Image (tube, rainbow, N blue to C red):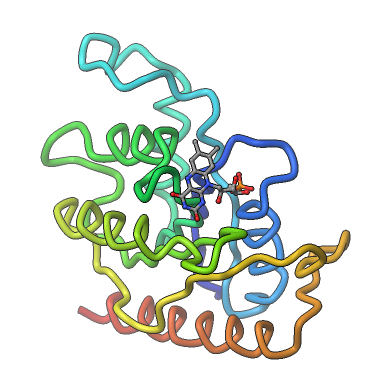
Length: 183
Ligand code: FNR
């Protein structure tokens, strides 16, 4: 059976380049992995006072909990993790001791129009993922400088080099998920 991967996109924007990248990867990943975007737009700002009475959080935690692994696809905001993504990580980190993210094999990637391709945000993602006890894929690092037209309207990657690189990444990630599952 294909690995079930929950995909969390750190942008809430219509037409997000990171969502385009996530959808292109979902197409490329088949049949080895089934990538499904788990929405985070309805999660309120994390507040322990409303934890336990927030249906959007219950749905988010159930979707992540049911997955074999998690793929984060995030923009970089001000050289850091965008607030919606950090908020999702915070919801996913609780209840303490029963966090839906804990123990899951995981990778974090991202796209930016800038040359650094989200590398600064990715370093911070790795720090948070590690403290949440996720099994973080070390390599390859995926920092995509997104040029107009890189993903076509049918979510195909139009640049052959980038497509080959992302196919290689997905292969490594699938192997990592399999390896973690054997532990
Ligand atoms: C950005 N952007 C940006 N890009 C980058 O490479 N490094 C950065 O630190 C920032 N900082 C930043 C802050 C804020 C508040 C915004 C709105 C944007 C640009 C960003 O990469 C660009 O808007 C992408 O298109 C965002 O990704 P999505 O939403 O298209 O997936």
